[in-house]
Length: 416
Ligand code: FAD
Image (tube, rainbow, N blue to C red; front, side, top):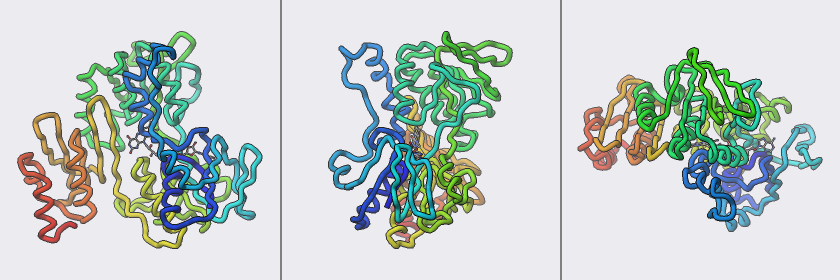
């Protein structure tokens, strides 16, 4: 079995295959030279204030740099018994001969193939140079870290998760931060308006400056970055562009697999070639939760969908029961989003900065957004899985313990 892409989904396939009893040959091919690591850390720990300070101090006095945690410790890595080919990019799939062609000239045969190629950062056309940054992989993060350590003003294009996480880190490190967003609010695809407004307030209170409804056309040269915003010129030392992800579908498309904003797969992650699966950010699958065919870009999804595909390759039939779940850390704020937070919001405010917004549509719980209230999300996940909606009054009342509410629902047989 061969896995292309050594990220969260790729490594999860490998782990699940071994856990499922597969002891045959297992090849993991990854374009990055690094062993699989936790990508979410790139916009968080890896760029943290203390780490940036170390960059300024210089090598001699600096404690070790912070790198993202590994997805497998050395013992786990050895136990997987992988033929790992890192720093190697697959250039083509020959489905007739069941072979992969790599950029180092190697030809790798496969019996079953998993595509876990994730995506790349969407670029702003015509913009490049040392002051322009994107953030998708460890090399991007190291480069951005060096830039931020010496910068005073960061311009961010894109008010989505990556832009906001970097804005928060930069702001905490003392940089002035300006965010330009094309839409009328933050995280338009992921957050309802009231939750987005709360996040915006939080950033503004930290001193981040926002401009909305701006189609940014920044320019960058050796001395800085510039952008016209409402007739005014905004200048900065560096620019981070966080405008979304383009799925890495070229391999699949060139091989004639069905592709449409993602590699199209069925409920177990199988493409229209039964020997080829696609998982993680790159795969577009029929969601049981939303009823739509969609891609999900999240850590949990990459892991869980990979496990289902690995089981299917070993003969399992269970389909993927997706439940979208995503988290983000900004300043000391942990934001978690579960399900499809649309519809009527019910606010549960603990009065100490913790708040959960539950969303109901046609009387049914559809999702939630929690601010420093991750514990609530655990209950919402179980209720969504069971198709159960607690009474809105109970959800809204911070004095009603959700654990007790959950226990009562369990005892009455409503949820497990
Ligand atoms: P990836 O992790 O992108 O892995 C794909 C790998 O395939 C890459 O290493 C790539 O180099 C390799 N590859 C591509 N093409 C080829 C080829 N032809 N040959 C060989 N190798 C190839 N999610 C959350 O839920 N919470 C968070 O807080 C969060 N924070 C994030 C912060 C950042 C900065 C980023 C970038 C993402 C974040 N995510 C977060 C999203 C999460 O990390 C991704 O959803 C997850 O990593 C997807 O895993 P994947 O394996 O599908 O893709």
